Length: 142
Image (cartoon, rainbow, N blue to C red; front, top):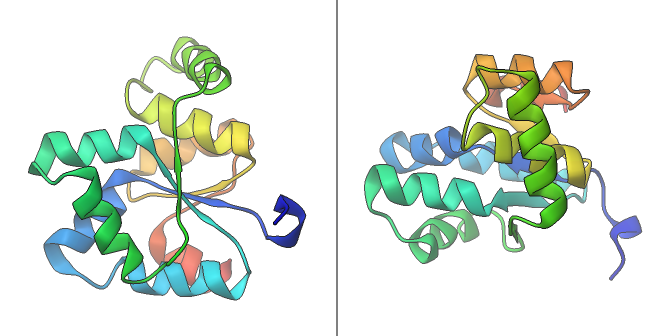
């Protein structure tokens, strides 16, 4: 199946998934919007690593949670192109360090929108020309 069959992909930041583990209710409405637009949910490798570091949850456990709402997420490895772009972003924005630089680079390289609770990350994304949303705004307007 070619990418042309899908809408714009959406990168999900670790804070959105962490909120799902803590409180519930955050991934389901986002996944519904993604499905409505025949798009793909993108989970960067750095997001899985960050969640593991914070909670001890394995990547498989994280993906099992995501699968409850979205059956076909894409896990995105750190390609050379993403690593190069992340270095450019870190150099340009001193406040954008690991793993945020990799999350932004993944969104930029893949042409994805970004959903995050981190307003600083969202502002940097917008400066880089990346569509960026708080979860509630994504659900309302995307």
